[in-house]
Image (cartoon, rainbow, N blue to C red):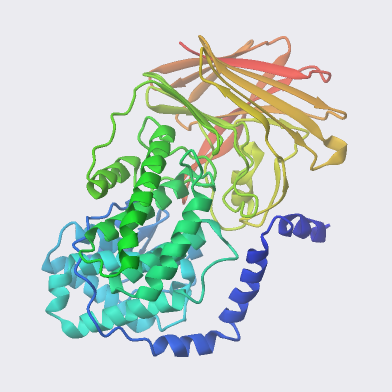
Length: 568
């Protein structure tokens, strides 16, 4: 019954989310005319403080052909021959969000010249002309938050050019000031997590830029509060998505960047910003260490949770930004390491040849599992810098079959019993009841070993208990044990990178990618293997055909299964 699903989703919410949703809807409807009227009266008459910010890192989608009004986001290209269509009905919401982020201004800050200024000026004036206050997708809180920061970086880099056009400068600063003023009425308290984070980070960032004391004070309090809540003790972001972790780390570096660039601290309160900067630096070091630990040997992010390549800057780019902002070198990365990130629930084995990342953590944040997948006890595996066993990826953010499949247990390298999901996934970002990890342990010495278990009671008749142990000796060994009163089917899933080829024999599957050869070995007397079609989505809009190996017990009474991976 659908009302039960709603209840099992709502019961995890915090009271602030429920109240926040009601306030948000009220402000978007009945109170919106009054808010717009109030924001229109807000003017910025002064000049922002000169800063000379360190150049910011940027993502793949920041590089656009602005001279031809050609934009490509999420692997979908659009060319606007005349004016940009800021609310194109045929484009997905996330595509339009990217158009309104204005991240494509950031590469221009790395090459300051008249041509780039003129290109940006035309697009900026077009946006200000065709996006009145409160109208259209560009005035939603999330794109405002990202755009305001990008505009500030651009203004700071091109300050001398703006000084030569005072009317444009005044118009730009007034519009930017009004955007942030509008944002203050629409903090996404109902969503929490990375959405609320970018709202409060932008408030502090803009406050420091405009020297707006009320924004600075409120922003400082809220940024400190959200960082304490959202950054776990091991340095990971609490949504447990490597992509969102990387984005939040860049945000933290942005704030350090701006505080460092600020030349004057007049009041006692402003001097407290210097102390806060040291707190941020400690957070940034911890978050960098986490990011470096889980980054794949190919330099890209693992696809755990909602992660897609190209949305966040690469780990290398973030590392360079880190060193420039903090003015300290990165520690030399160890070729071989074993790391436990217990609060995040990630466990990593890395040597000169192998990379194994195991997910032993909760399914996202209990009150905001929008970016969580059914991936407990799943893993990613690479050999010599090439991905072999992969997470299927993000799918997309539109509700539908692909989104549901990408979040499903069937898109991950774990055991499926009786076809049950680990959580009640629905819509694009919703989850009702979900499993709770139990007794997760990691041994780093003498041999690397991770063990975890859970009960799945989403269906009382088909409920089960599952425990998985993964250890590395001469090979990588997987041992699954289960208990259930009614067993219908057991499926052990192993998703392969699209470039892998397989060959089946008795008790073994040979896996080949380029010159790499591996064997997946199991007891052929007790276990059968087959190959099924699936998909692999490393980036938004890039859905590749892929395959997964499925191991199943031959005997219905089986209660365990083992397999191992050998490098040949």
